Structures are given as C-alpha cells and as structure tokens.
Picture 1 (cartoon, helix red, strand yellow):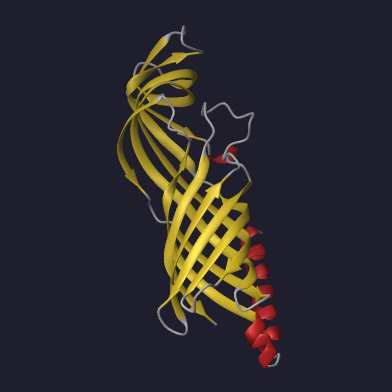
Picture 2: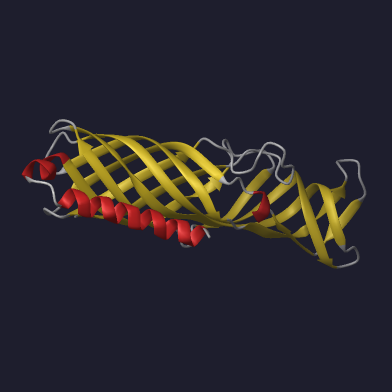
Length: 252
C-alpha cells in the first residue's frame, strides 16, 4: 500500500509537469523543474551527546540514497517558492561503549536468557535505516546566475523503519540501578516498531550550476521531531534525524 502511494504521487507530479510544459514562453520563465539524486550522510542522534555514551569506536553512514523532484514558482527573477517530493533513506551504523543506559534487551545465549529492562553497561552496536517520503516547503533565492539557495522546512512520512542492534561484553541491572546484575555475552534489541511515523524539521540547500542543465547540490535537513514518541522507554534520551545530502540536480 505504501509503495502504491509513492507511485500515485510520482504520477501526479509527472502530470503537473506535463501540464505546465504546454504553457507558453511566460510559463518557462515562471516555473522551474528539477530532479535530484543524492546521498545522505549523517546520523539519527541525540543532542548533545549524552553522558551514557562513553566512547564511539566506529561510525558508518550505510546506504542513504535520495531521489527528489522539485517545482519552483519564481515570483521575481531572484525570489521564488519551492516544493516537491523526495524519497529519502536515512541511516547509520555506530559502535560504542555505553554506561548505565536504560534500555530493553533480549539475551539469547549465556547463563541468563530472556528479556530484561534496566541499566546496561558494555559494548553496543546500533543499525538505523529509515525510509521517508519528504515534502519540503522552501523560500528560494537566486542572487547570481549559477547559485541558488533555499531555506525552510519539511514534513516526512515514514515508509519503512529499521532501528536495531546488539549488546555484548557487559551487563544489565535488571529493573534499575539496584537490580540484579545479569552478565551479557550476546543480546539484541529491535525498536523498529516504535519509530515515529512522521518527521518534521528545518531544511537548507544550495545549488551551483556548472552547465545550463546540471548542478551540484548540498542540502542539510535537521529534524525537530524526536524519532521515538515520548512514551517510549527503550532509549533514555531524545534522538533526531540530522543529515547532509550531496548530489546532482538536473533541470528539466
């Protein structure tokens, strides 16, 4: 059903493009259409970095591809309004040492097996890969022929969520800091079903045109909505989507 919704929106945008393409010369001056392909680098992260995270051993952005279609309505030769649709993958893989982090773990091997909730200390590996449909609304400014800047906000609808990982070389205090100590050889967690279904935040981007049709683009999206709802206790701090996209744009 979600894939069908994506196709329906893309067909609608294609229809709007075809409709405007039939207008006269004035429409070509007032309307601009661009297709983007890029790669997201960043993280789903707390701000600031909490005391529970003692050391980061490794970080990998994973595959964070993005495809977008933007429509700009120029109000003057320099100022316009941009919106559109993007299919965005945002993810990362991080390895860290944590201490006294409140979480939920499932231990599948060792002397103690089962599900435990409490204060965990040890080695942690987290994998995130979330897919969104993103609708931006941006003020657009073109001070020079080759440069275009945009700033505004975005709304995103979750299409697929993956937030999972493992814990090892540590222990969990079951029930809280004074609970029984459960040694962990290997444990896992999966919070994918708890990821919030929507995201919203700020967006800023810039394009540099190196030909009449092609441009290099950079875009920062900074989520203001926590990835997990307020009632979720699997992670003790708020996390946000903060990603920078680099890619190419093609003017249609």
